[in-house]
Amino acid sequence: MTDRPVGPLGAAERGHGLRLIMRTGMRAAEADFALVALRVDADRLIIHDALGPLAENMVGNIMRVRDSVAASVFEDGTPLLVADYPNHGAAQPGVRVQIGSVVVVPLTAEGRIEGALCVGRLVGQRDFVQLDVDQLTAFVQRTGTARELHDAQEERRIARLVEERVRIRDDLHDNVIQELYAAGMALSFAATDAADSALRDSVLAQVDALDATTRRIRALISGMPGFNEDGPALGAPKRLVAIVESLTPALRCLPTVAFSGPVEATVQGQLAHDLEAVLREALSNVARHADATAVQVKVAVADGRVVLEVIDNGRGIGASERSSGLANIGRRAARHGGESHLIAAEGGGTRLVWNVSAVTD
Ligand SMILES: Nc1ncnc2c1ncn2[C@@H]1O[C@H](COP(=O)(O)OP(=O)(O)OP(=O)(O)O)[C@@H](O)[C@H]1O
Ligand SMILES: [Mg+2]
Image 1: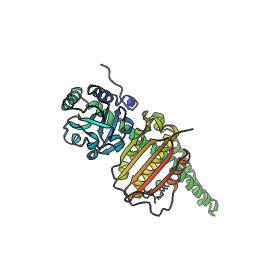
Image 2 (image 1 turned 120 degrees about the vertical axis):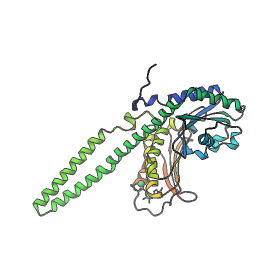
Image 3 (image 1 turned 30 degrees about the horizontal axis):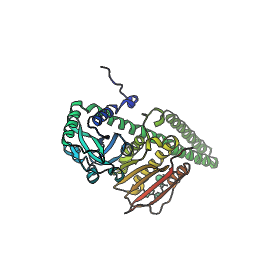
Image 4 (image 1 turned 45 degrees about the vertical axis):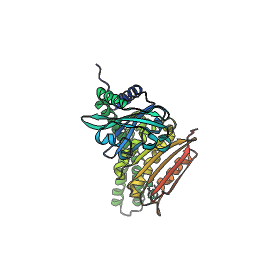
């Protein structure tokens, strides 16, 4: 038996095990689609991976456990059969009507329910029966999923760490260095005006010290690779989830995420870079200005457009003094033939809509 590679660069390998379990379970159950949901925290779960025709409207979605059809599976571990899904399910309306019936079984690691495997048949296919539930449960128990669950959680943890590093690097580059530069300029001007030569020398020495600090930071930054260089080769949904997860502590509330349409296939290159930057800024605005208790992130690809919405239920826009972040969001929209708006959300709060062309030239 050979060991699988471990460590950050083995990341492309990770999650493979769950995918295999999903595929085998789907075939055995003669299902049309399958998904694996993992616990994010006590209140939320994420659709970690999915197979089948509805996958792109599922993967990366983060929802409250209690809003999910799998709530009882996560709570007490009892396998579940949902027939007549359109009237009982919790997926987004456009997806819900396409699903006929589903079976959900718990995935456990060391006795804890860390996730769930769900297989489903589309509407019009015959419904699952109790025997399907028993067989899928037996299959999962026989297979064992502790190692796979651990690997999948590890993949998300690494993505979040890489994202944090990217954010620190960008902040050092975009803000800290500019501020040191401005301070150095102000001190240089002050030195020229100083009548006392001892004072002038001491101020100029500080200017040199600031320059040296700036050079040290630049050297540090150049040694800090970002997502595109050494991070796991993740598609846009996973990178956007990493951004949401890394900013969650600052938000002081638990965001939900919904993807729809071919996000992974469409959002690439410069468009991905801009969308990521816009999401960071939008969430940092919610963290700093909104005082919200709920945030929804939606990314939809349809009709040749990519639309990001960040909706909070905070104090609303109000009068603002500055707008460099929003101006930047607008520039990043214009670059892709689009526009952005910050508007009052229904029922209070703020809604950022960033709507751009999916076609890159
Ligand atoms: N989600 C939000 N809830 C409430 N107010 C907001 C929200 N987003 C933006 N604002 C208001 O709009 C203003 C402009 O936002 P913008 O991001 O341009 O600037 P900023 O966040 O204050 O500073 P920075 O240049 O560092 O981004 C904010 O100062 C704030 O008053
Ligand atoms: Mg801002």
